[in-house]
Length: 217
Length: 176
Image (cartoon, rainbow over all chains, first blue to last red; front, side):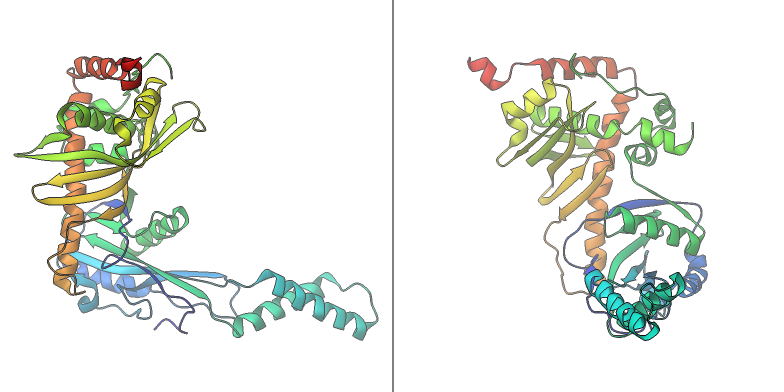
């Protein structure tokens, strides 16, 4: 399981709500015979949670479709023929910076009183900051979100339920690491080369120039 | 040429595609033949155009049918291209509405036809996915129709037709 209950559950969904997604196409072979391996790999790259002691402020990993608290995958919660579906969970510590600064200042003042020195060493400042941040993390929950992923293994399309550039970058890297498959987001070029056009015409894309429709540009 | 160069160098095909759809919308009520059926692909109540050289020179029109407005036509005459547009796809009895980002070839805010089931079951999920896949497949099929001319010698004649259409006086100018 994925640790503590998050303080927000932003499910961006394939099964309900707004429908905005990035459409990808996989490059490489994948078929039903590889399903067990895919599930094993998803378990390997599952969401593992953010620890207050960890240096990391953000953690990404896979969760079960429509259930960001469940991170153990099996065929029953992954596969609805011909779709592999899951979620990308992202947890992030969102510490209030004003509070962090105030707590650090308070501890630095206390240190100055104890040591009778007006300026702390660099090491002391770093230790106080780490202590304050860890203590605050222990007393709060990270913000959490999950974005649905639906992969049609018959036609090689993958829909990722957001167009956020930051989330897309994380998703693309994690998907490729998990499944050893390259994925490309749809662009006019990818649409042109995957829409069933005569290959002879597709060849004309290379070197194609923008059409000019008016003298003013 | 590497993949990223090809992607970057052909980005204009998205705006050109929507210009072609706009022309079809104006000329043929948006009716396009896809395989063995006709669909209607219409420009809806929002359209955003940008200058080719200066993105800051943008025109954003909302409400009613902005693609039919003199302002929108004037923007085309100024060499602007469509970057985002709200669209409607009518296919038989069913209707999809969505925002289309021309340079990314991406849809957002999609409204799908009413689902038979919306109960969170696997069947409901499959139906919902099928409706989205049908939208994407239809858009790709209409794009294929555009490219079948755009990448062929027949483009020269169609390019002239599009230029002549853009050069037509706007309804305001015609009245003056």
